[in-house]
Length: 149
Image 1 (cartoon, rainbow, N blue to C red):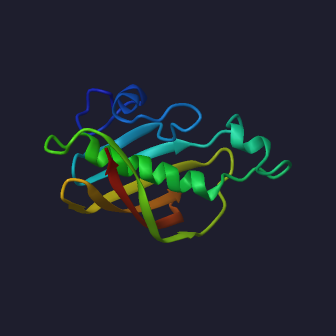
Image 2: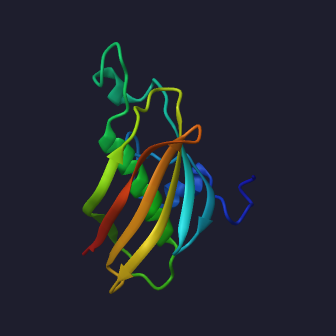
């Protein structure tokens, strides 16, 4: 896919849509994107990421909280291009039924799939998210977010 594919987003386009910056920009590329419905994205996990200095020396594991944050960022991409939503910062309002199935290590490529479940009063949303590595489920759950004034 090229950056001219209307269903994909490059890293530059992602940076224009999300407020996150290094070291918290956790979406490298979007493979499929249906604004207001769903998105499928990639996160390449590399040993050069700062969390691996301390999590854990000799056995680097991606922290679960960063996996959940990557899922949330993909969820955010679903709503950022919806024209009828107010502009502002969407933040976590809750997480439900999140389960981690296997460790994520440097060299893994996360395939993150999010689907919008609901959007209420244009301020509160819920997505279902799943993360796989090489076809194996790594993490799944529901994430809620709200618009901060």
